[in-house]
Length: 143
Ligand code: HEC
Image 1 (tube, rainbow, N blue to C red):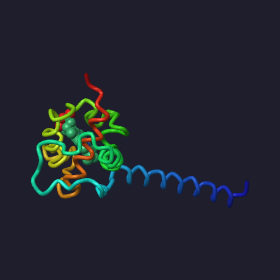
Image 2 (image 1 turned 180 degrees about the horizontal axis):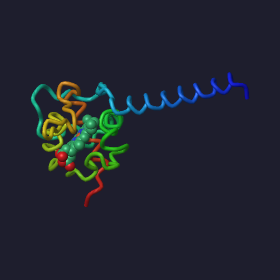
Image 3 (image 1 turned 90 degrees about the horizontal axis):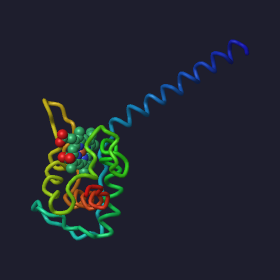
């Protein structure tokens, strides 16, 4: 191998590993994705206490993709947590867990000045939040 091709090979390796590092960084810094809830009845401006879309197939479908785009990087693909954040399959199902869910998704969670979970109020519509709730109910794995 000439020294030229060796150098070429080396810089290729450097480039590739830098591209890899960039991907890792980008992964940790995901911008929240808007969720299109067209086709679902709007919920109005007041915050509801209960999921208005329970049992709604379209909400389930939208919520699944909304979850995977906005929550899965911490809570795991299909809500199976890899340990970074709580496993949401064990969140109380149905009306029992609705208020807790809404509180967390709206306000997120900050501990000692560190944001552990970002707030989604102002980023996701209330409709979008409830579609994610509908999806989580479908993934419930408790008793
Ligand atoms: C940056 C990481 C991160 C993202 C993104 C994230 N969360 Fe969280 N979430 C956490 C952490 C960490 C906690 C644990 C906070 C605590 O101790 O209560 C948490 C807690 C929760 C809880 C309370 C769980 C429990 O057992 O009490 C709910 C509900 C929740 N998240 C829903 C969501 C939803 C829905 C999304 C997407 C819209 C989301 N989270 C996005 C990190 C994240």
